[in-house]
Length: 178
Image (cartoon, rainbow, N blue to C red; front, top):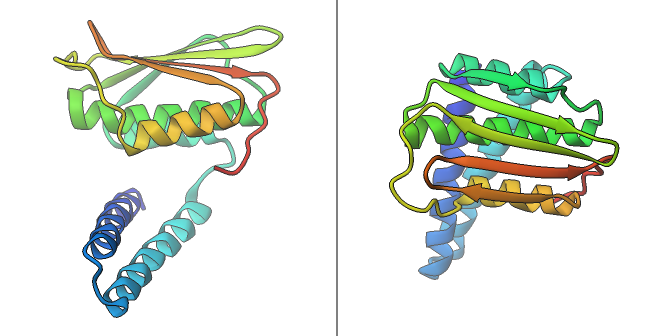
């Protein structure tokens, strides 16, 4: 299931780039529709796979997904009970897992959680190779930032001397469609 999800994820990325290229090059409407149909099929496969195998708790799923990819997630602190905060914490872990594998060759992800009456703060680092330059947010980190800020939170990415993702979320954390 994981391999299928990763393949579908890659297919979605490819079809998005194809659709964008078709639009930028002002290709025929048939080519644009073919790209859109391919994109829709990939999304449907991903949604079906997610619904059939994802546990109810997003943090558990994120940790299991990381483990299946060879990354051990070490969490310190109490996890939030708020469902919105848990979802964004899980999304942070999932994004950092992908990035630490792609860019840092990491095998461990360190997640520190701090909660008070009004907010939840999450810091994510890893044991991989430190960045050699400032990290420019791509689609994944930018999407995470959008979700965090839509929920009333804040996010920062520190590149040097080591990668650090810091997310602060209000409690309760209400998620809005992004």
